[in-house]
Amino acid sequence: MTFTPAPWPRKLRSQEWFGGTSKDAIYHRSWMKNQGLPADLFDGRPVIGICNTWSQLTPCNAHLRDLAERVAHGIYEAGGLPMEFPVMSPSESAFRPTAMMFRNLCAMDVEECLRGQPIDGVVLLAGCDKTTPALLMGAASVDIPAILVSGGPMLNGYFRGERVGSGTHLWKFSEAVKAGEMTAEEFVEAEASMSRSPGACNTMGTASTMASMAEALGMTLSGNAAIPAVDSRRRVMAHVTGRRIVQMVKDDLKPSDILTRPAFENAMRVNGAIGGSTNAVIHLLAVAGRVGLDLTLDDWDAQGRDIPTIVNLMPSGAYLMEEFFYAGGLPVVIKTLAEGGKLHRDALTVSGGSIWDEVSGVTNWNPDVIRPVTNPLTPQGGIAVLRGNLAPQGAVLKPSAASPHLLVHRGRAVVFEDIDDYKARIEDEALDVDETCIMVLKNCGPRGYPGMAEVGNMGLPPKILRKGITDMVRISDARMSGTAYGTVVLHASPEAARGGPLAVVQTGDMIELDVPARRLHLEVSDAELAARLSAWQSPVARPSGGYAQLYHDHVQGADTGADLDFLIGPRGNAVAREAH
Ligand code: FES
Image 1 (tube, rainbow, N blue to C red):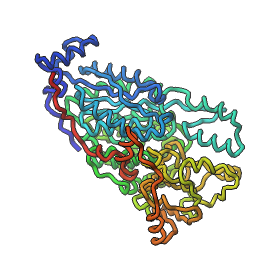
Image 2 (image 1 turned 90 degrees about the vertical axis):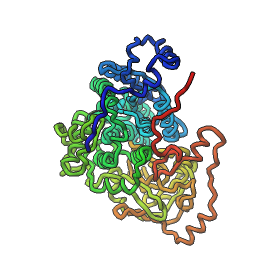
Image 3 (image 1 turned 60 degrees about the vertical axis):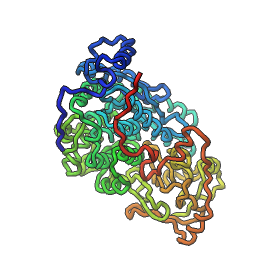
Image 4 (image 1 turned 180 degrees about the vertical axis):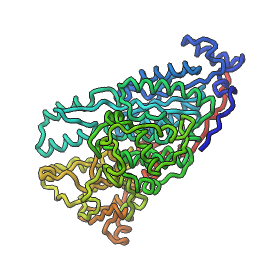
């Protein structure tokens, strides 16, 4: 894929605000100058926004002010004018009811800020799970030159000499307490050891997955995804990204040049190789929608089918992002896929060159962390897309995080009508459940929760955990944290709150899961299923007012990316000129 840079010099977008001697131009410049900016900074050079999701309430992004300064250094150095601005920052660890409900609101914020402000290009500063897709979505809709820098992962956690991963060990320790293998006091002691430095989750959870997706799409400089937040090379990455965006503006290298079908196919394959989060499915569908690309669940299944998981990181494997970085990080994975013929080598990146150019010279420094394809962690990585009368529009499962003996399983449904029902009954010793059952959770999809909570990996009943059993088949319309694991069928579509078949599963129904055949079947006759559905009434009330109502009315299903229907597609950067 060849890219032809635009001629330079030429008049940039920001000059529509700052150029000339009109009253409007003086108005726009004069106010800016209250920040102590010399007049020659408005001479037609690229004005670069630094779009920052910094927030102390998003702890994974709390160090992004420092990185923004580094980006600004690079922009000045390359002859641009940096302008940092804040956008909404939905924190995965704290935002209620779910950060996911606000991904689209954050993307709207980004889109309007990019379009409405006097900037020619933007550096996107992201970290925590939803911030990366939200920024990519907003930038894709506006389509001005854009490049992303991640905040980077936290350093390894350790508890009593053992590596502990963000999220992954929260679930593990929580189950251990329920099983009587760990005391509540020990659990509290472990808390501090899990998050010992600035940065995002240090497992291959959603934050690291989405940083890897951004890199695989070509929307970051090579090597961005894995550098720890506190490593000085993270600052270097921010600095050189600042330099790069100035040239991208001069060349007019835009997201629409980079976010092509080959780029998305590369990203889906890379997700299989890294054992990435199932959340990437929804986010990439949504980003693709913003550039008008018709990416589907079937693409996910097809692209990942023959991709082995070679990155040995939690939750599927043993190591953490720090070791991934020391082993060579994502460029090694991309190179490995390319050498195996599993990558579009000529896909364009923000570098202005091909993705192959970026990775061809890298070395794998630890083949236990990044395995050769001849010794993978899982021979079949990728995302399995299941269909059947229980999920006619699809459901997903991550084989690398599942128990092999459960990938083909038939079991009796134990149904929870919603998350409150689950919480109320799961620890009841009288609950009629054993390890052969299939736990079913309803009303946790995009509209049902709302925002599609990460509760699909619902914890097992204590009486089963005490037997030493750690996995059962679980099915829901929820998502699962990228740090979690188990034989968990997620994103069942249509969701229960829209009257999908999941809504009418009853305790005692038999369900058949066959991952190799991509089948998810409720053993109920078509006539019985139709009768149940015709009697069904939604238990989810429409919110009255505010963003919650807007979201409820317009959110799409998980199978197409859960974007708001009116945000799908590119809208460009044109804006009516304000007259003063
Ligand atoms: Fe923010 Fe995991 S909670 S990255």
